[in-house]
Length: 221
Ligand code: DX5
Ligand code: ZN
Image (tube, rainbow, N blue to C red; front, side):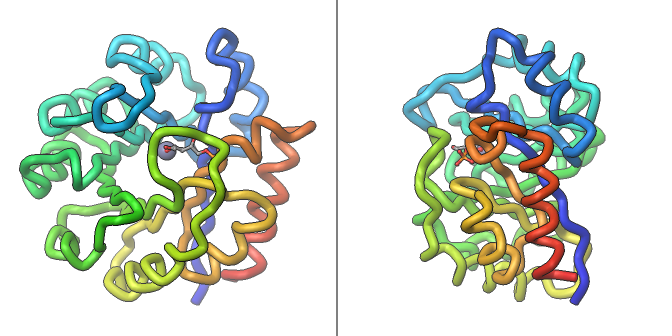
């Protein structure tokens, strides 16, 4: 089955003091920029508050895919849609009312993403499928870039692909995606790939994105 491949570089490991430059040098090769929002509560790390995130979203030349790793995300999630994100992903583990929050993201004009941590079962959340535009299967524990890809998540990716069936829902993987792991994730059924350190630690980040895309494409299409 042929699928459109999307590469969404994470700026978590980019130079936060020079984000315009960092984003500028990969924007042309990227489908969306993946913005990791962490609150030091849901995960043991902090990146941006809403105000700083909004500034980044407003100055970003391409669409933004916000990955909200924040506790009690129900109220803030639609604000990320309203401020201009193309896609807003909430974590099932951090959301009180999953269905209503997904619908409020859509209503505010963004694609609604539902993410789960490695220990969370996708079957527990498949009932929300009609409110979901993208599932995110974490392939590391959320919180930090540069961790090792969890091969053991591929079974979950496959099961999620089966649950999606022929619906136009994207299936994103996040964590440890590199030239060594992207083919396996694509084979399992992923079509949206977050890559942080693989891109920003590369000598040539934009070429790395092209190489990642080529590999995933050759598996799927
Ligand atoms: C981890 C973040 C990821 C991270 C990926 O919690 O959600 O987006 O930046 O970084 P790499 O690609 O280095 O694993
Ligand atoms: Zn992320």
